[in-house]
Amino acid sequence: MKRGTTTKRATDTGLILERKMITRRDALKLDQGKCIGCQICPAVCPQEAIELRPGIVEDGRLIQKPAVDIDPARCNFCGECVVLCPMNAFSLAVNGQPEIPVLKYGAFPELIKEISVNGANLALDAVAACEESCPTEVITVEAERNARGRVTRVLGVAVDEAGCIYCRQCEVACPGVFAVIKPWVGRVILDVARCPEGCHACADACPTDALRMVDGNLVLDERFCLYCGVCQVVCPVEEALVVERARILYQPVASAAWTAALEKLISPQAAALELERKSQNKRREVMSFLPGVGGTK
Image (cartoon, rainbow, N blue to C red; front, side, top):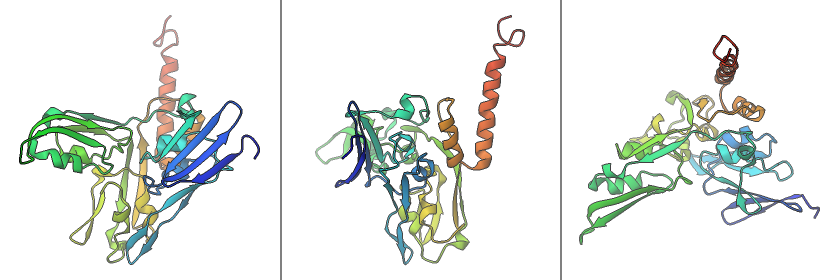
């Protein structure tokens, strides 16, 4: 095989793409257990290397979740999918070390997402609820227990942020213990009148229980929504459920690659407002350096 050709192989957990050159080895991994088959990486990939494969819905239930596949002939190992995946399903390494080229070279920004923890506020009777609230099981509570197994003292609360999806389930389940900043801002338009009777597909697909069935009724709680769009992917009725991403929170960056990504990820109106906001910030920055305007005379 010619040096520099990208290979793809399946593993027990997903896919691995590798490109070996004389002084560099790129490896992109997709954990299909974490992947939910949402709209984001297929939409943003600048090489159109990622293909979304719809799930299978039968009798209103999701029996096979959506998934993505990657074309090794197209992938350039840029890392945009790694930055934006809401489920942390992608990872990228260069010469065996974690590296994301679009971040390293300033083509993409760091997303603003954060979880802070104050374990001192965790009530003794809320320890189980605290741990069980996390859909990705990245919360660990260290506690002392008596002979009956009851918690007598909380020693610490830890979050493995590498696996956190910033869904706010923990924040709601344990008030005062967690504070979460989600990177995505948007809205979900749900028209239950269009939903087929007995259909649970969107609730089955939702990774955070933002959509769930309660007493036979579909309920939306946007506090937990990641705006990933997987619910829209699996919904069998067009316009019954629409996900609109209005904004992404990120550190400042000036990049054509990021501008192109924004135009794909958020609504055209929101993208226009975001670009205008960036333009105004740039103008203010330039004006601050003009003599007699805000800079040095």
